[in-house]
Length: 103
Image (cartoon, rainbow, N blue to C red; front, side, top):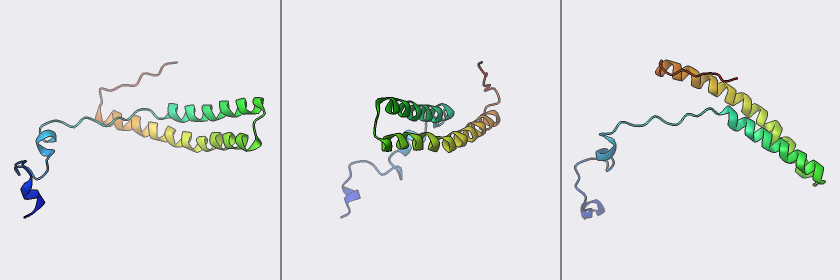
């Protein structure tokens, strides 16, 4: 006897979630703009470094803040590229979607 034979569920579908997901359209995945996240991380490390500098914290903590802020720069450049590709993908898949720049 196999454990699957003991299951009270009927074996109509090969996968149990087919009855739920097969009839509903899948929602689009979230694709938020990522540049604000990168800028927030850089700003957080910079503010922490300034606070630590003013309070006389150990030098290793200051180096950690500097390293965090500097490591955020390649992340920011990557997120700029990601957001540019995101806008291009949106324009191709949703022609009615327009991004308005606020100044």
